[in-house]
Amino acid sequence: MASAVEERLSRVAAVVSTRAPEVSEDIVALLVGEIPALRDEPRVVSLLGASVAENVSTLLHVVEHGIDPGRVEAPAAAIEYARRLAQRGVPMLALVRAYRIGQARFLRFCFEELGDDGGDARVRAEATRVLTELSFTYIDRISEQVIVVYEQERERWLNNRATVRVTRHPYPPADCRTGCRSCRSPRANRRRSLRSTRRRDRHPAARRRFAPRSFRLRAVEPTCR
Image (cartoon, rainbow, N blue to C red; front, side, top):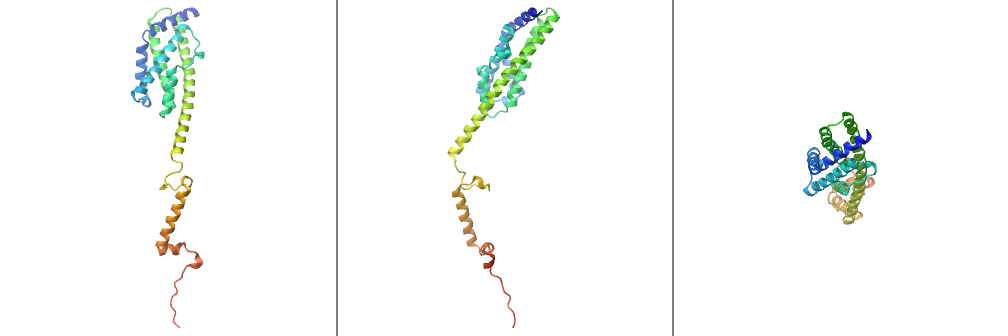
């Protein structure tokens, strides 16, 4: 029975491969419609299309030729797309959802072909189970790889931004009004202190308030002798 299942899956994958462009376009349209975070400029959406197309092609090869999905590496376009999402601040959840939603739509195409193929019902049921397990193993492995790439790229990109910000502005502007002492430069602190002193000097009431207690003048009511 095992050989019959392998032959059945190989035949199904070969037929679906002839429709690979259609499958990929359908998955991309579904992802952009279901996940708003993936709706980006045309160049990035085009890279999404390349990632989907390469994943569809690779997974069909896995099914058709009986390749162990646990030894497959993520396609180049999938790796680059993960980097682009990290650079643009797209949440990782959107990337993970894309793989799960894409897997479900891919299986739908395969199941339709598997049902149209006819044959022994037991072989068809076993082929369905094996196909589902192969796709889940593949998606799990590829998702793990692209998540690692996403995290590394996101950390690198944030570190680069912080370095550029410090290089361009080693101190915050002198007119910073946040009140945070840690974000003030020494020169800005001296300027604030000088302005505060000048304001006190211009207002007698302020001078009396900030003067030492021993030097404050007290009004003495006249007394009759």
